[in-house]
Amino acid sequence: MDIAALSMAMSYSKTMSDVGVAVLSKNLDTIQDVGEAMISTMNQAPVSELSVNPNVGANIDIRV
Image (cartoon, rainbow, N blue to C red; front, side):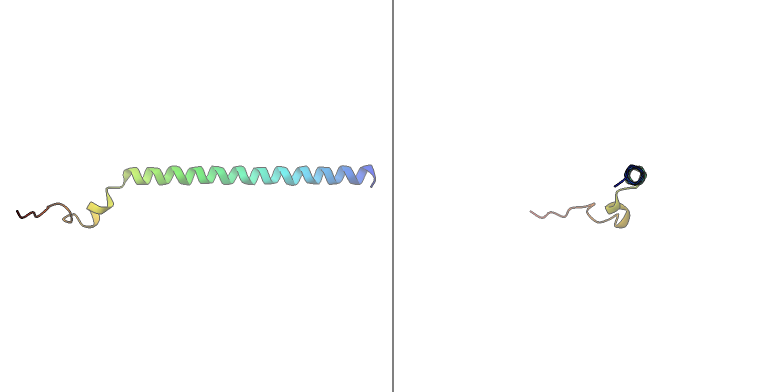
């Protein structure tokens, strides 16, 4: 293999590696944004049990 072909192959390999790292970095940023939005939504939402059935579990009937 001549030096020019080897140089081109190495350059192509480095370019593909750089592209892969950039895609993974963008994916990580997106996942972090989604996670932060999910946490924010969970903190803002009322307790789902109370909002669906507000009377369920509010009173306990006990007989002795």
